[in-house]
Length: 232
View 1 (cartoon, rainbow, N blue to C red):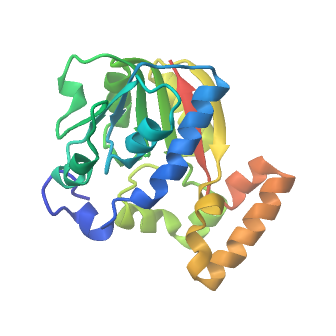
View 2: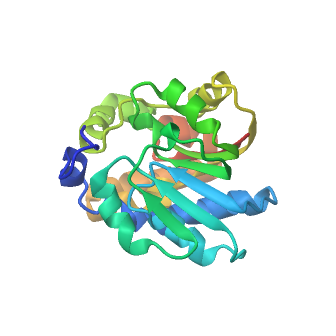
């Protein structure tokens, strides 16, 4: 899927660039920061998309001196970002990996599953900050494998790699990172993607009950969850 050119395939398939999910994603990031008592002064997001996650953190994070920077190679994404710029929030239609910039915290939110050589991408990105927060869709589940959902994700949102929790965490470790903390995020349940169709409502009802009883089984059997990881 093309992200780099203007009027890209990704924009055509996702005209909102998932802005509507940004407040929820920012909530997960803030939760992780507070849980680990982290107070970064300089935050960068690589593959920042529409920029609304950083905008939410800018407005909601208690430290009003923190400076935030978003990098995305897509000109389409940058068009979404530009109106969100503020004194402490800047965006760049540029490749962070081609710079020498250093930050306290790097955010990589739903990004490396799109990248062909994701090991190299993670290693190079990690050099730009002491702490990193990753949000990783856990696409691979028994239900996804049996229903062909993985190929739907490949064509609709460009996921060319699919992860379980174990695969995601070990990928970060293989890249030389220390995993400090992690927790599941309930993306399908809390964003309620299936609310507009009967099958989606039924699956979400089952997903909610199963997660309450056995979270690990729900993640592996039904899917619809993501992983938030703090690493250094």
